[in-house]
Image (cartoon, rainbow, N blue to C red; front, side, top):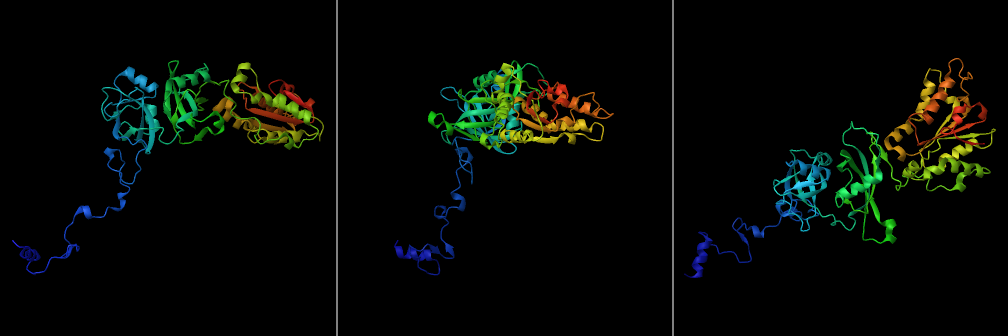
Length: 473
């Protein structure tokens, strides 16, 4: 058959010639709808592949680990002995079919995506033969931290802590510790050095991040540990770069090593007795970092000020653990007395500027008195309220609270002298002040600076050691 009749047949009854080869248009539109010749969709660049191939769908960045994502749900471990070891070891059980074990037998780091609200959480897992596929065991503290319930579905994949750079290790970590049971109480102190050593031995090479909740067993008593802050460091850096070595980030995560510094803080809501470490420095520096003694503006009172610093503030520079071991008690009261115009008020005002403490509370003696019964004693209690609240929460790590009491002789006269009229208000004020300074519940975070022109009029009980024990004329 010749080519000409065939071409005419393809043209139809109209007898038209076929279009030239370079023309792709037929009658009424494109001749073929070949998908290979179509333009890609607008979101083609953001497509990363399906979820089963390690991608994360449309418009999402690929995973840092680049591993396979596995759909997971929470499943408990039936073996009670293994379950206890996993819970107190801060480990999770996974199936070897989902996450094959490492060649060296080390634990796995798994990045979980889910929870309410949705977030990313890294846990340390151990492949357990026979554990159901598509499941992971999460303890109550771990589920509370991640916001995951027993019925939730979430994803997991292998996490690479070194994908973001060299700073993958923890330089220091701040932990809040307390009893797992809110009703548990004990008078036996827990040594911070012993707890730090045990924590590193138990959770070494695990990834920790702020907010993480860990259940630790000590003396057969479950303790709840909450990670507060972490500081990342690069172990490959030299010692010359120690000032730039640590980096503190609010949302960072890193690996715990034997060189990491573990610092414990007691839970403010519980009754946990924590014995501070002797090696831990004082978290609250007593002197302001930018303070210079030349800025005091006190002329002719150098000897007096040196005596104040040596007797009242020198003990607060040392670590709390060392102070507790040596049995040293901080000075809680300072009395400045002398004729008018000798610089008593000036020294008290400048001391407040020198110290790295809360703003001092300045009160005049007559302001304490009130016409209502019991109101004068309540005014004394209000002066110590902030110090009592912080000391209950932080203990010896709380900051210093300074109370400047001018004209102290107006309210603290000798008891029995009838200074309060017929009501005995003056005696009650002295009793209340003594109870706050040196009562049953002692406070080590207060400093009362009293000023008077008449030292002989002040009650003798206030001038004893433990109260206003430093007298400076």
